Image (cartoon, rainbow, N blue to C red; front, top):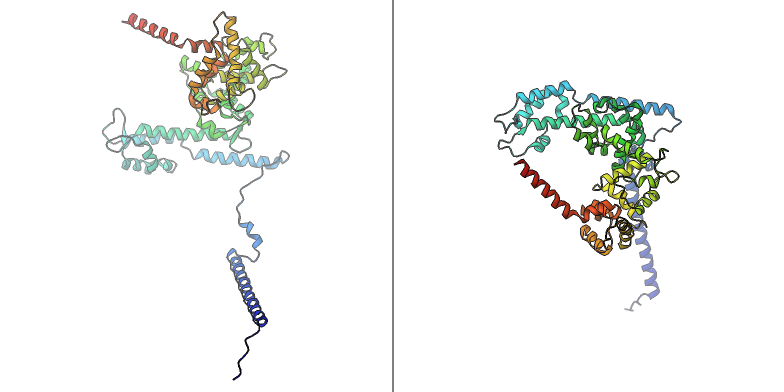
Length: 457
């Protein structure tokens, strides 16, 4: 038999290329078929043939506010919000329902007493919840009970604590609804004008403000509103969240003026009281020597003990709003709030901005020296021996203990709890003198108290 010749290499190559093309075509067909099937089943699952319409199933989350010229839409929005808030108000417990709740709690108390307090067990608590009505359902839960459960050996809670909890919740919701009525934009915040309207209409309901002349109302409202905005609007956006107003204690202080028998001490310590507002406004009028309704730098220099340094006052007029180089009452209120509350972060932020001359976000040795030189100059004027800056600088850094040993940030001041002392050392001669003589003052106070004790004995 004749031997078969092996296939030529060119024939082998052609055959492999042909087979490769067939295989590639087969894979492409499979992929195309898979894509078609996926598209078919996905479209059926979405409920339509056009995949582009899937956006229709996305819920709407943005509703445009009516423009100023859309009067009808604005009225519709206001009316709908008023109806909504009225419905929410009706869901709250009224005085009669609160009295009924107290009666039920008292009736279901479980002995023995804990000290002087009546107690209630979980079983009795649930029984009261069943009888109190649907408005009370949210208060009679295991979560609320657990919150108020302390160290009672019988696993009971105090009836008074629970009732106070309910009262506080009702008050918060009432106040939120009341504030929301002044939220013109309906976005959960109040602008300055909104809060002014709220406080102005609140004045007749506060017996402690009965003696205020109506001509003073506008100044009183300005004084009250500035405290809210100074502490609750640190970024100066011109609006405050309603939830922030509810969370702080300022409303408690304001509504404390409903107490007709409020003590003199409480009135003097309450920023919103009539004596306090008249004090601040009276100081402003006394400083305004030319009676033009504004304060110049020279007039402001007599503030307090008249020991604020000229360098610090220069920075106040450079950084904060003035009119032709003079300060109005609103800017003055921010100044007073900052200096009277130097321990508070918002006040420290105000002062730190003045000390941070180059807007670097920190104070360095140069900044401290710049301000302390003015203290040294004032000490010379008063015939005192100036203290060296090196000693003061070391004490400041020791007090603050900043993260960076060469820079003091605002957060460092807040964290150290020494921000009020540091700011007093740098801007106020009287504050520096008090710090320098703190040991002598403490000794004198101790001696005075010991003498008083001996006299009493």
